[in-house]
Length: 192
Image 1 (cartoon, rainbow, N blue to C red):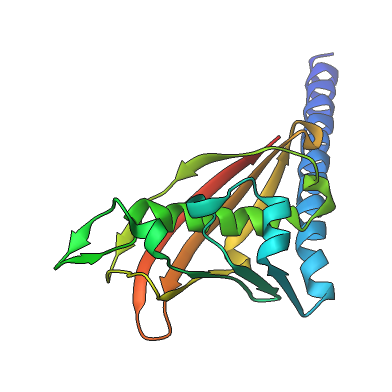
Image 2 (spheres, rainbow, N blue to C red; image 1 turned 180 degrees about the horizontal axis):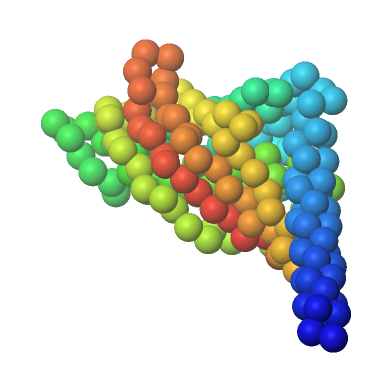
């Protein structure tokens, strides 16, 4: 009798484990499906007008002029303007781009990447977490800032049957053609 109870418990636990694995497998399939969307096209370029249709940011808060998504990289470009630097640090009499703008630019880049998947259409995006940054060289008005993220460092996790999505990016690199400007360690967004 006791063996029957033990066997019955093992069967129940096995079924629960299978259900959990099945649910996780569905989530992974959804993430893979989103990434596979980019693998179909070798390169996708999103210009500023299209970026404005995706992001609510305007004026000095919009920190992307163009985004290029390839199989291996997500790349954002932004011409640093006087307006963006006004009211920020002055170094040797020069205006500089504020450090927190690097974090916001990384979050906007990740949001544009995520918005390419139809599952994200019509949903609101909020910043969940910034994981820090290291600033290497000052960025001045007139410089073209490039923010890069390897696609393997970007992911999306679907929770609550897809009603809540956590989008993560790590190891962003901010640079110009001449020098590295900053590293953004991680950004997490919530899409609901």
